[in-house]
Every structure is written in C-alpha cells, then in structure tokens.
Length: 185
Image 1: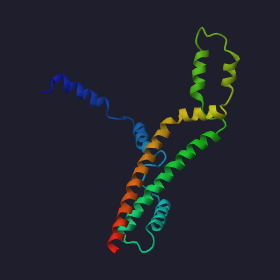
Image 2 (image 1 turned 45 degrees about the horizontal axis):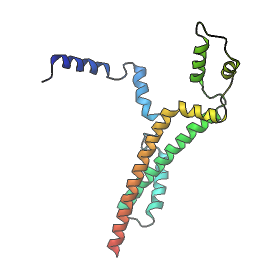
Image 3 (image 1 turned 90 degrees about the vertical axis):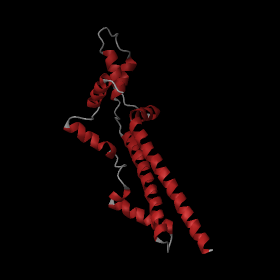
C-alpha cells in the first residue's frame, strides 16, 4: 500500500514535470524534432516522393508484382532517408566550417570571466590575442564538433534508424524475390 506521503510526493513531482508552460516554450518543444525535417516521412515531400518512386522502380525491375514494388518502395524510402540525414550532417558541418567567424562564444566567455574577476592579474598577451582571433584549421573543427555534438548525436540516431529500416527492407525484399524465383522453378 502506498503511503499518503508518497502519493503527495508523486503528485508534486508530476506537477513539476509537465513540460513547457509558456506559449513560446511549447512552440519550441513542438519544433524540436523538425529542426532538420528528418523526422518527417519521405512521402510528405512531393519531390522526395517522386525520387522514392523512381528508385523503387529501379530496385523492383520491370514487370514486378505489387508486393515486390511495395517492398522496393520501403527500401527506397529508407535509402532516401539515409541520404537526407547524411546531407543534413554534411550541410551542418560545411556551413560551420565555411563561416569565417564561427561562434566561439563559450571559449571566449570563459576567458572573459577569468579576466573580469576582481583580483585578476594583468592578462597575458596570449589571452588578449585569443579574444581577438578566430579559430582556424584543426582548432576550428574541434570547436565545431564540440559545440554541435548534440545535433550530431541526434543526426546519428536518425542515421542508425534509417540504416536499420533499410537493412530490414532489403532482407524482406530479397526473401520475397528468392521465394518468387523458387516458385517459378
């Protein structure tokens, strides 16, 4: 039997974890999965839908029955999804690398906090040079990867999901084709 104290604590926790309260917070939460439109089904975009149909026809081959065409469409959808994820990752990284003044505010803020402390010593010239510089080469890439890690991890999840869907769809497609060939022979 659950105690009255435990019930009150559970109710208090439930009230604290009901999600965003403001209209802005709710709108932001609603857009979380749509940041790169990777959570949208391929068929929701007419251009991608046409690509899926073209690829499915190529996969199924001429004279394929409805079942084979449907399985080929599943393979094609997963392949187009995989391509979308990889393109989104490439765009994220190449846009950040192409930005000459990529946002390094986190590192600069840390240095500024040190410099603005009450009894801070005179800053070394390297610190001042850092504040006036922009990252280049490997340092810039490392900065981008560390700051975009959350988005890259999300994209990795989308990619793994698309790879799993493609693998399952290919297996089902191959099994059906094998079964159809065995029935013909």
